[in-house]
Image 1 (cartoon, rainbow, N blue to C red):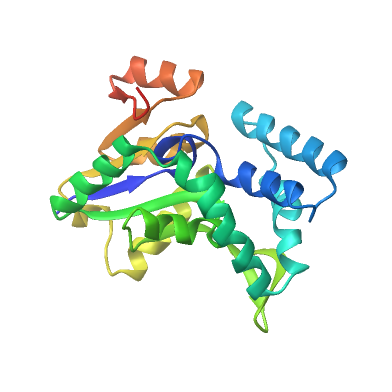
Image 2: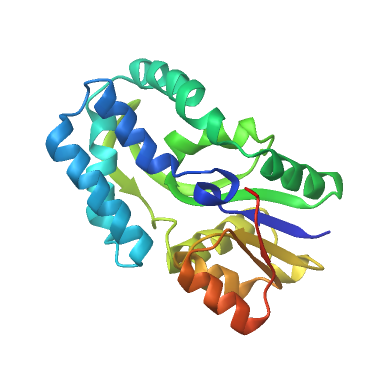
Length: 221
């Protein structure tokens, strides 16, 4: 059995669900456009540059979850899926996931974006397993804080190994381990798997992939 891991934003999706969620809340009038749009743009630039302070970003991104009921958040998310996410779901990405599922691989999405945003997206791709940044909950409401290690940069590798251990598995359980990603931020996990694949990569990842002989593919063209 192989392990097949998929980054989500700008890999399986033609866009970034974290960024789009904040923009959706701004467009709904839930967040004030001026300061929140400026902050959202700034954090997204830092993410792409590899300079993001994940804890500062999570304070920004998770706080709105704490201000509204679970029922209201889910109503917003239903509309978000329909208007923002489904149009970004790539046909080639669906086919790639289906290929690995059809081979009997253990498949999972692994993403820095929090599980409130991404769990419905993983289900839409037909994937039961999701490793994501976890927003803390208390008494049925989000607290606005992160639970555990954020699933970002080296933390993505940490969370992956924690998840494998919970399944009673480790890296040696698999004949091959695949990871599909677009981002320089995923280098720790890309360097760990036996079959790293750069997908529509950012310039830094593309240069690293070419130098190391990793496959470079596009799910958009």
